Amino acid sequence: MQTVGPRDGEIWTFNVEGEEPVSVTAGEFNTRKLTRNPRKPFDDKVELWLAPELGYLPARLRQTQTNGDFAELQLRELVPLRASN
Image (cartoon, rainbow, N blue to C red; front, side, top):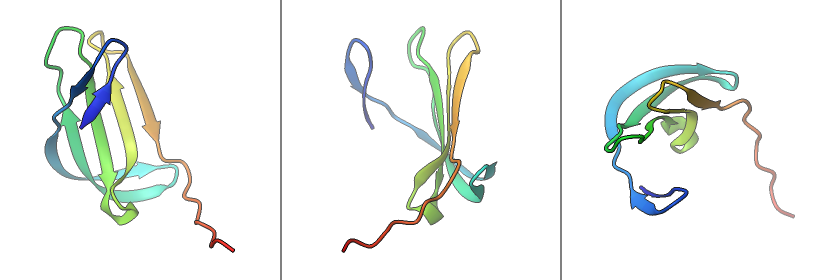
C-alpha cells in the first residue's frame, strides 16, 4: 500500500494474520486482520481489521509507536447511502 509520511512516501507491506471477530460500537464483525510491523527504528506498528461484509472497509485500526503509545480508531456507525434523485 502506498503511504505518505511527514518526510517521504513509501510502500508498506502488510501481513495477513487471519480471521478475527471484532466488536465495535457499530456492531460485531468477522474481520481479516492485517499487520504492518516496524522495519526501521521509530517506525510504527499498524494493525487493520477489515470487514468483508462491509466491502473490506476497516472496522478497527490501531497505530502503535515504539514507546507503546497508540491511537485507535473504531467504526461507530453505519449510515445507509441515499439514492440520487
